[in-house]
Length: 216
View 1 (cartoon, rainbow, N blue to C red):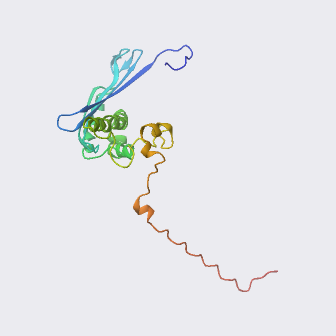
View 2: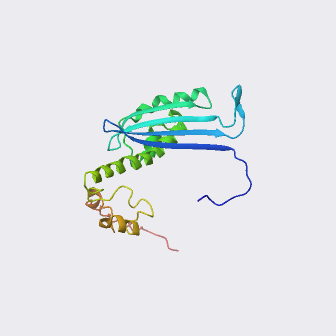
View 3: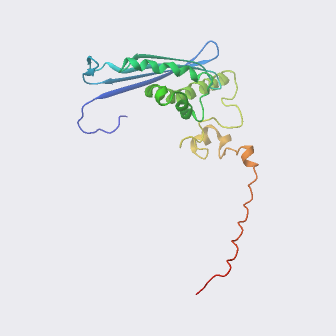
């Protein structure tokens, strides 16, 4: 269903972003991202002209992951960029090898290739690649378990996406239908947090009484 109609307008810019997830023969996974920006009009480009529909940015990214979402390899290609100097942004990408996609992924990207150490559009591809990885790897593992005649989900804790959106509320109807064992589930406190005794608040001594106060 399309979104509601709006007023008469002129198209100016198109950004297309695509992710693909692959299971590799060696037991790892490849997640590939492609970003393409184009204008709907001709515009100056250096000493020439970039025609309508030609790519301003056309970037590719491939990240190879294991089942823990640890990065084993990373590759980038810049087929089209506004400036020739943009290509140097790929030089620091190997810093991601050994890092894990998970909580704090945005901060990891920023600390690794943030600001002058990287490219804004590659960072955007990296950030949303995490969602594609979560859609690819855990679901593939679930299908493998079902093919072996096992339960689609193993363990006594719900999948990572539970309680991360309104639909997967542990007190909602979807969880009740599909994962009734997790209805009302609450993430337990970390042991160090639960067992940490609160430091008693020390009483603040009252200031000494003033001597020879003139009350006149």
